[in-house]
Image 1 (cartoon, rainbow, N blue to C red):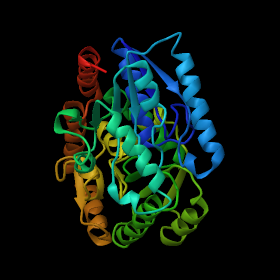
Image 2: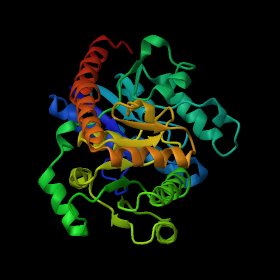
Image 3: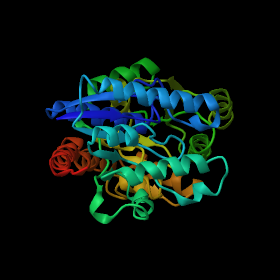
Length: 374
């Protein structure tokens, strides 16, 4: 089946890594592997486009180009990934109406409070128009189901659990030893690993929380190192805070390509990232797939990808003491840590495996293409 694929928030080759981008790339890759001809059919980045008159012109031009391209390769179905109030899909609804093909959404978001703010109101209505046009929507986040239930019928909404491709994140002890050697970390020295973007907001709040929690850990457990991977505008401030709170204990690994991350998870004893405000967090699944237990804060997003007391510990919100105590308990009990890591890898392969999830998606898309009536 010919599938026109579109990501209004970030095109597939966007340079800034994120969980959303990884999901979009995974969908595109999987559908092609399953025999579809899935092509990124539009590249217009619609984020806040309505704030400038030129944005409307660019949106109209992108729609016209996409429609013209469809004369030589007509899609059987259109699939948009992640339309929401900041980056609504304004191309798919128009093109699919003219081509008379199914318009399907993956991971849309609908929040009625966005119409109250004059800045977000246009995006809210444009996103609502896209949702009303859709014949079906899939979501991988239970938190979003409540909002989508307000505008979509139960028959036109399908929940698919979040996941990863486990073979890309398999523990490699030799690769882990090489990473530890590069950093000068001795065998047996506890290594905590974290990966995140250093940007303002909840990401920086999480990293700040982590450093303060590990400062508490250091008062009674001095033998550990913390490696933080990532980059972003808050890096200088983060480095300064790390030197103040954990002098000599924090290593900054820089931005690591996703395909290389398995080596760093394999080097670690624990993956520690609080995840304040995290909607899901693919890094938790990646770490667990590599047999790395997780310590994070309990919220609705992280709880969907980490099993408390089975594959990691989920602690009460903003409780630095509980967080540091959970880390200490796993560092001091190597048998419990290894067993939790084994269960973590098994959990991802059994219950968060995208090979299974995307076969279901493929089957449903085939059904929608066959049964669709304009």
